[in-house]
Length: 143
Image (cartoon, rainbow, N blue to C red):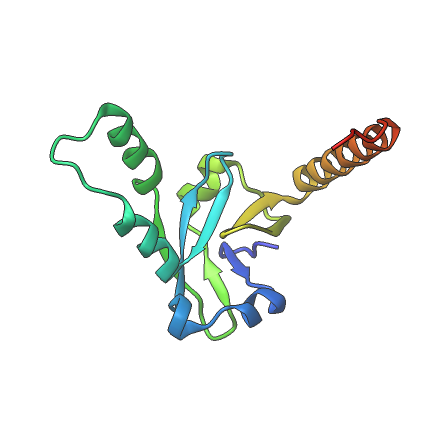
């Protein structure tokens, strides 16, 4: 849930996995390739940014990537209650509402509108069940 001041409480299970010495004391918020707000632990995000090789004359695709991914990046520190203040412009550009679900997605967290996440989860679950049923119907292949 995003409160009336655009603050999001980081769930306890996520807080337990964060180590300020290793991960930093904030997140970097970016708009992900799926147009959802993505949160990266501070030090991991900085590692990703500095890992990118800087070119003297970067190609247009590299410039486009930098504009898309870094122009809206925000460092957001958590407060003593582990709440982060989400920038209004990010919420507006991503269409993020107040009823949200925070999911883990590999190396980052994603913020989804709750109803959209429920629909996405059901679609993924049904797809996995269909694939499993298809796999069970296939005869084993000789090795």
